[in-house]
Length: 486
Image 1 (spheres, one colour):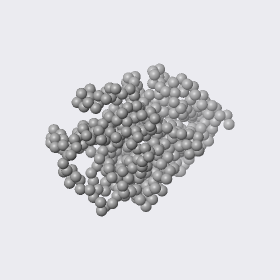
Image 2: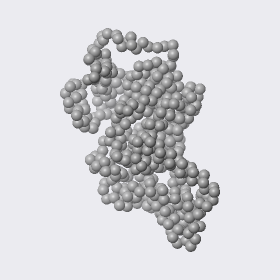
Image 3: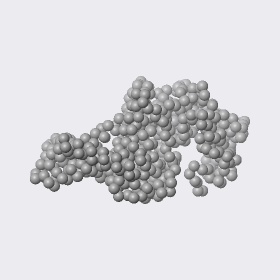
Image 4: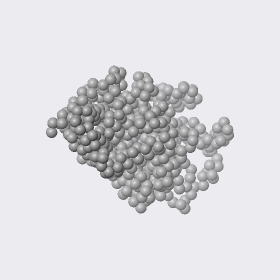
């Protein structure tokens, strides 16, 4: 069956009259509740082709009205039967990744290593999708080992209401006004008011005594669509980093809120994500300061001939070798790893830095961050370039101004380093004093090659816009001139 993006297939619409209601909806942000029980798990005929019992499957489009804030709730949430387990978190897979995963969207290391590590440290966080929840835990109940529900007994109860009656009853729960003046969004359900409300929700559930587990079966359980442009990916990670940092600075900081409630190792595991935004600062330092000091003839690292260079070399080589090894072990390729390192640099110097600035401005009362939805649909030209693994820069975003400016600054610094090596009478002295700085600068230039290609060579719509090019070159020239003249 061929499925169009943002549409329900025509074959399915014909089977269920509720889906035909979409034909009369003029805007996805202004429509009534559309609810349909596709599979009634209580019915004896709810089984697959092999006779396995199927769970209840429900299609739900919550009521959306312009005058009501609907908190952008999305993702796959399901009911879980159990006692102490509050939720089972599955990884999300994507069905539109390129061969070498140009934007680093696969999360392959997180799926196979990081989340199992969280599982061992006390339970994975809730990531907002691909999750089976226990209703009692999601509705704010504390875990009580003396209270166990007899699910087998309840599941054997006779069906008193048919699916049609349940559909009409449940539509009330999906209306815009149902949550007004209730504890929904505060003590019950997902917690509102933060771009990373799923993380807070999972943490609060674990702090009430519930457990969570991670399950990554061989068969991909939840499929999604990954961003197909660089800006979309960067904006998505900015939202995540901003939400995480807001959590760290709030009463829901895992070190405070989780004290004596969850294990210390799980508290620290949450901090690793909560501090994404703060990690932008050391990355920016290593991107800007070494190349600036190279232009000013200021060595920052030990001489190559000095034994003190060994700790720097060991840390750099061991860390990158370990990163490459675990990436290949998780099924990636060398080229995909290089792309992943590039996206790591791009995210830290733009998404995380912007998230840090926006969060601080919000705390000072100068900004009101808004929730930005990640676009899932791109035009044909963008999709064609994505499939060809050509990065998309065709937008005059401030993030691209920062990316291009840093890339051009490192390029000019590399030219300065080459000039030193070629025209200086004592080549060995230059390479000995500035060897590590020159190597770092050249590595940054290699990672930024797609930026140079977009700024200097590409003529398609995915190239860097002229205003961004002018601003970045002007900034880099100005900084380089100041460095060499003082």
